[in-house]
Length: 76
Image (cartoon, rainbow, N blue to C red; front, top):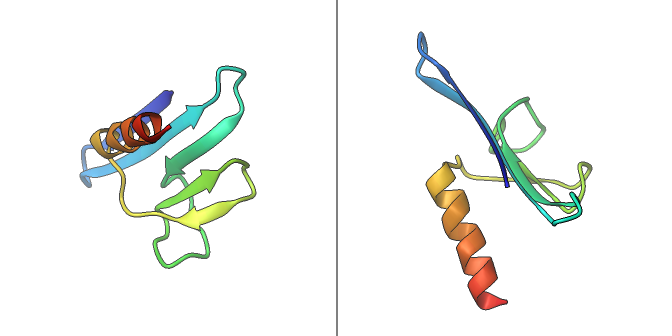
């Protein structure tokens, strides 16, 4: 798991990237808002299994990401 959060004090914006990857560094999923994307949730989006597979995403927080990962690990 890699976590990056930058707080922009003047605007209150949180720039984030939360990346879950395998033990050999293969991307499982990354949620971020680092750039605009052509999706209705832009700039919030996720990359699933590859950088090119970009999907809409709700605004994410570290708590939401950890809950998602826990649910995936529990369900097998």
